[in-house]
Image (cartoon, rainbow, N blue to C red; front, side):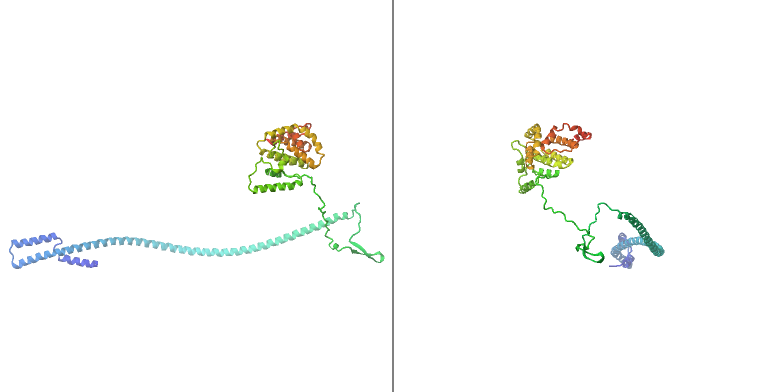
Length: 453
């Protein structure tokens, strides 16, 4: 590949050999010379010159084509050089700008270095000052702690001194107070001979040697403990009623069982609960509230058609009557409230239970006379009579609420609790309130209706 200088040399050589730089001018010169040869008569030498010039002009056409090609390439090279020069100038301008920025950056860097050097010196001074201050602080803190400890010790010494002084004064006063008590003798004091000493031998002049009887008196400061009486000889009363909380009644009622009222009934209740547990574990159908358990069937009357829930209510009211006499009126109030909740679970009482309730209200007077006879019977016979009364008595929720209100009034006036279901029915019908209502406090008249609103 030729360089730029070689292209320029070839271009100059071709340009020197050309007579004309255009092909049109070369053709015109050739025609003019040929025209002269035809028209004029020249000498042989002149004619040869004209022919040689015509040949050189024809050969110059080839040189002209080479010249034009070289000129085109030279023009392209020059154009490329021009663009490159322009680009070089642009880059040079950018370089100059960057150099100026570099100079400015170097200048600012030098300034910052000088500032950094100054700041480092200041920081070193501050660190030195900080170390001195910390050292001084530790010295002052040490002195402060020493003074503080000394003050605490002095305070403790003063406090101990004051306590010792007060204790000495207190002991002196206590001795003065206890001194007169030594000279006081009560009438009940009787001198008893010491049991820990005994006469071993009699010496001269009526003197004796006393010895300890037992070796247990070595620890005389320890008082001998007394044995507690054994409970083996005690026997529980079989007929004593058992007191239950309202939650126990509700739990037994949820299983449709009767809570045990005496100790012999506990084993029966355990067997019933175990049987009910086995029944549920075997996956049998869940009994409804209208089902009657074996324990309730024993106390329910099939002829009157009393439901299981109603007979359970009768049994619970019987247990309440047995336990009310030994409890507070408030406890029986909560038990009767539990009965009301239990009775509320059965929405529709049967027609037979309503008829039974009417018959029980009509016969309440006769039962009142029979209560006196039942009170003289044994606990077993009395329990049977209470069960028979519950079998023939069904209390509706409304009458039970009235019964509870009247029983509350009677408790507030005369601290007496109905012991049997017949007395409970007398209270519910209001037949036993004659002559007792004047003793009702005024506050109770406004509070009783609010209990069931």
